[in-house]
Image (cartoon, rainbow, N blue to C red; front, side):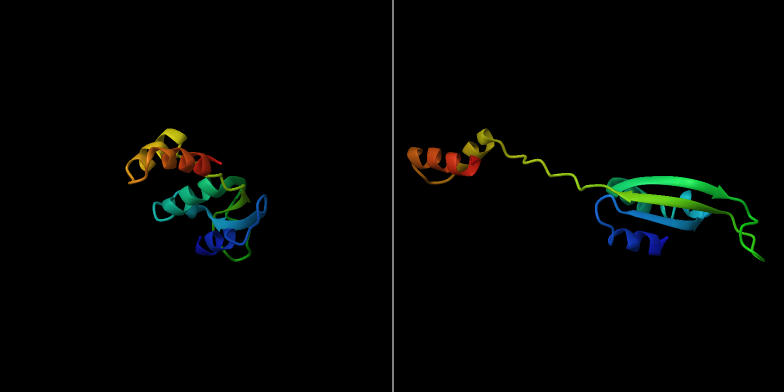
Length: 107
């Protein structure tokens, strides 16, 4: 799972990562935090669940997982003009300076 998470940081927006992972990482508590982070960064799709006869001389259940990186969400500007005025009001400026600062900061 670690290589999968590390590979995600090299993806561009709409880039895809496809990997064969052990089936246990999809439901393990140990990897739960990693999956939560990945869900925030993009879309996860289990393309196919493989049986235990996919690899010669090995019995392991696997899944093919596809991750698509999405565009990072823009952070909303939380400070509106009224909040800026309140912040400025606490300073030692005079009234005209308040208005000038509000106009400059809102532009």
